[in-house]
Amino acid sequence: MAEIINIEDIELAKLCARGDEKARHELYTKYAAYLYALCIRYVSDKDLARDLMHDAMIKIFDTVGKYKPTGSLKSWCARVTINMVIDHLRKSKRMETVSLEPTQEKIPEPHEEEVAKVPKTELMRMVGRLPETKRVIFNLFCVEGYSHKDIAEMLNIKEKTSSSLLFKARAQLAENVRDYIRRNGL
Amino acid sequence: MMEDWTDIIGEELENIEEPLPADDWSVLQQKYAAAQKRKKAAAFAWAGGITSVAAAVALVLLLVRPDSTVVENDLVAETVPPTEEVVSVDSCVLESPIDTVLYVTTPVQKKVSVPVDVVKKTADDVLVAENQTEEVPSENTEEVFDVIRDTTSLKDKLLADASTTNKNDSNEDAYTQPTGTFGFDEFPEDEPRRKRRHMSISVSASTSDSPIFKSYDEFEPPMADENQPPYIGDVTTPEDSLGTGQQQTTMAKMKAKSGYADSYNHEIPVSFGVSARVHLTDRLSINTGLNYTRYKSLRTRTFLAAYEHQKDWQYVHYLGVPVRLDFIAVNKKHFNMYFGAGFQMDKCVYAKVGDERLHEKQVLFGVNGAMGLQVNIVPMVGLYFEPEVSYALNEGSIETFRSKEPFVITVRGGLRFNF
Image (tube, rainbow over the protein chains, first blue to last red):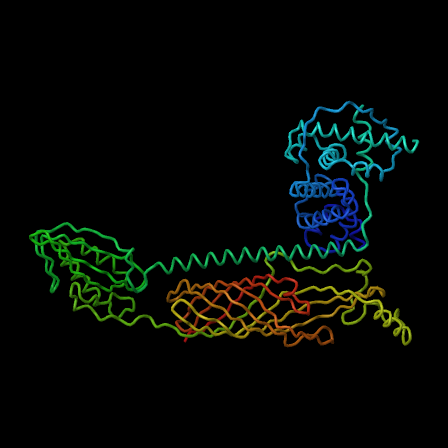
């Protein structure tokens, strides 16, 4: 076990690709909790998130041989997981039909310092309360750092729809954050 | 700026982790094993489907080809221009002017029947046909038709053919007499067909491996210390650290109480067999016999509380009865190719791990499909090579290569004695 604990990503990937069970367990130990949280951010239901994380881990075990050390193994695993989650949402038609209504009036957005005071778990909860499509777009844009063009391709929507939904998601989240700050006197 | 506060959320959530239940890894392992099985089943279904389609295509191709009878659809009509002279070769007389229509068959390997209709036009334009059928070996079929087409040199060609045939009449594949049509009475009598073998006995050796997935160790619990020296046949803890007497008893109790986890390294199985093939028709045969297979594995038993390994070799011996229906696609004098599908029943006759006897009451079943190539060194003895895909339908209670890798490719080679 000892030699696997400090192993580099590339070596770990190679061992996993060879079917080394200990390496797989090592990979799981390193990234499962992170991938689980990632799934929760996208689907909010913890049981479903766990199932999706398992599916993603199985895919990672099977395809880790394709991992190229251009980026970290962690971000490669995250990409596999995100694709898995989006596929699931698409198949289950959980992505609601998007209506491009006129943009609501502008809600005052929270300050940087105010947001920093909100605990991570609370932020997770707030993101989890967003409607499915808005939540996915918010995560892809603000957390994963994808562009609207990438998001449009991934979700098979127009770029304009993506930016419009992000705006709505931000407005809703801003309201929630301000509401939390107001209630907790931060 | 708008991005500022969402950037903070992004940074906060980017690397967040969520604790997982304690049993999550074992749940994932179970799901992974199930996913692997599904993949294997899918691969098996694909392989079976492709084999079936290939066998069906081969069967159709062979069935539509004429063997000993003429198939009407294969007939080709040709018209020979009328000639002005009467050509006579012994009893073969072609009168002119006539429209001679020849119906020829596609040449085949053995003898083919050649219906030759000589159509005569009478004075009042009524066609009178004489239907005659010839049996000629395929090698000479084209030649005969050439002669017929070229009526001007018919006499010389036929005489030359007759002369050649007489010289070769001791040859097995020689031209044989086509009685009737042209009255080649001087041609030799039809020789008996190649003797059909009614039964074959074969001896074989084979080995198997998984086509897709490699056999791997089961996960050992994290507490298993790989740095401990392997101590085959006993606990890995050195004797001196175990202590003696009461201490050892305490350790044994601890093992019994704490339980253990087993993991296996499976070696590729080896089989030997004797089989008999009974020919049902020219093309179909039943293959059955007795097959011995030995499965060898290294079992590592990890005692969960005592931090110890115990490594033992496991030997499992099976006797099996395979039953397979073979379709002989190509049946030449020196070469055979066949496809087969069937099943196998295996019964464990002896199993042992370390000094401990194991018992397997179940009869194991499997299905298989094979393609064989046989080269006959002499008519009675052939060397064959037989790749086979097989799928184990049940696993049994003893873990072996078979239970770990139910879908395998077996490569078998052997000698076949034809009677």
